[in-house]
Image 1 (cartoon, rainbow, N blue to C red):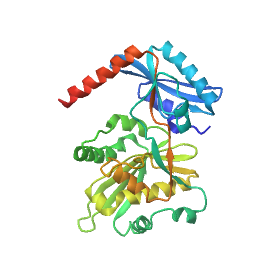
Image 2: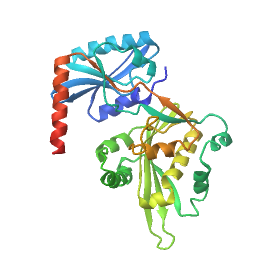
Image 3: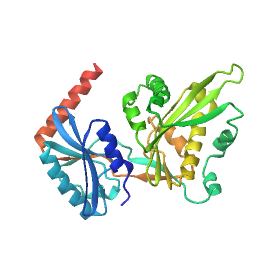
Image 4: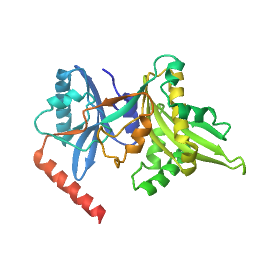
Length: 310
């Protein structure tokens, strides 16, 4: 079974650092990491990209274990995100489709093979910018110091104001960067006329035994003009290859047939310039254990959303 980083022991340690209550179990044909959540006066279990199961029987075993865990912790539903899309065909009664939390579709680049084979999968235009970055005053640094997360959050906050999107708090991202699987990359640009140096792009990546996950990133206007995100992505991929990893996960694309104004349309077009392949997961589902309380939870969510709009 291929266990994603969000179902690993390392991810459980991250959740513990964030003050979450979590449970990880390995059984007959399954592995899961379940996080106990509280919202709108109810409790539920959330399994980011889980449970991980060998087959349908393993999934049934996992659900049986999860239902017992939920009952012991007064949880009224179990929010699952199986990676195997076929699991969606054998969900139990009392399951409803929820809004996808982690991406249902993603773009993955195969890093196996020679360095030259990998470079042929990279956009030639971005490779040209990458090879000329020193000439253009660009350098790329890495850090595992949680205090340096400010380089990313400053860029993200500016982007959030422009696009009206939500971002993680600086404290949350600090905790992520403190984990052994996490690395911050940031792009510096030195103005050749003034000599002033600025950080124009940054990204946060997670590595497990086989995969680099490109989870967080942002750039400013100067970075866009310099193609900083493209240059940085090339560096992220080459470093992952040098580290002996097998795949590079771009972490989310818009679904096929999505309108041009889809919020991920631009990101998706960029990611697909790399010669990778699409991976589809099952999506996010709620296995309901108490239908009355679940309906109340949904009503309270809608009320809260309406109040926030006002």
